[in-house]
Image 1 (spheres, rainbow, N blue to C red):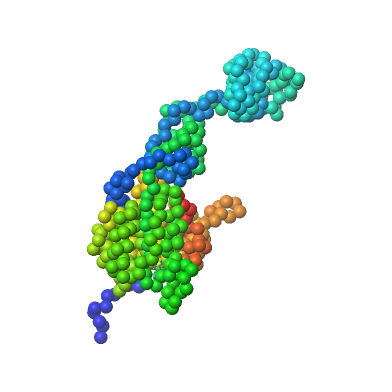
Image 2 (tube, rainbow, N blue to C red):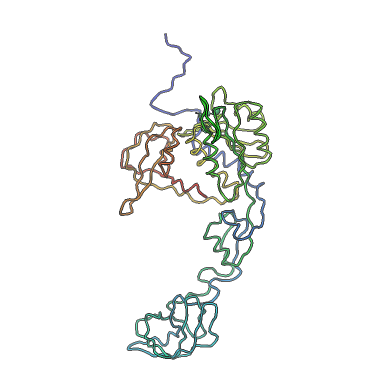
Length: 426
Ligand code: AMP
Ligand code: MG
């Protein structure tokens, strides 16, 4: 007899009418954090060097131009373009030297030149630099050939930045180039957003910390280490709150404590429908949390919402699901909460050299390896087993291959969307 109470799920599709698409989840997250990010916009002053990796909280307007004066791009001789011969050669007298940091104060007239070093200020009357390799040096003069262009080898005032230009804007993450720009503007201090405080937990009775012996049925807590690595950013202050056992009262206490000290609380595990998955009922009691089944693989269950003022992400327990949901949902939210301006999507479309297997109904984040051949052509291939507990294959891969919800079997040679992991490093 057929038992009518057993729900039937077609095995050829992962379509679930109760699940949320990746883009729907992203939209809901964006809506909720839009209000939270305003209240976090507290700024602080920091020294130029300590601003590295932080999020800029002020526009940087140039108070002077750079280069601040016309200067030589070469080691050579500064002349007036009138002295470039039209035919034959011309001879010009050397009347002085302009060093970087020690300019020549006189004026260069027709028939004259000065010796000039790279970066040295151009003297009055000169507008052209002839490279030293392109002249014949006599005792007190040089001989110049034809073939030079007027105004060559000169770097002009304001070519890089003009006074009044906005060189950096609020929300910019300060990387090495930005640090250099700040220093070139002579700024010893800048305004940055205060660090975002993020608390992380693992949940599960089976979890042991590294260095402890494992008993039967136990595993090491790897998620907290992965999250620790993913959250090592100068704009984050990380609070590692350890492992919480699957005990309701302890989960509740830990979540309340975390929400009191952190702007964002991230947990892993306990958000599924198992008998020891108490995260859900705890959050329903103390916060306003959504529990979503997301149409993605790996990473189906995700809890998202608020406990008091803290934004809460309850990531799934499986190690690869943690990385997938963190990178796609938590990290973009964290960047926004930290004050960063959203950067453009940098996913690539690249040819995949291997065949990919997939069911319709979910977006797949398959682990791939992106590489260039000897001619510099990029391609991607899939790396081994794709189950959400196979953490080692994350380490063999360097990108996610993102396959759309409705796609099924993907033949070798197909162009696929690729997200390099190094996108997560800032
Ligand atoms: P859960 O959602 O708590 O049922 O966890 C799903 C799977 O992920 C189980 O196999 C857990 O043992 C595993 N898991 C949960 N948390 C961690 C963790 N912190 N480190 C490694 N594996 C974990
Ligand atoms: Mg668990």
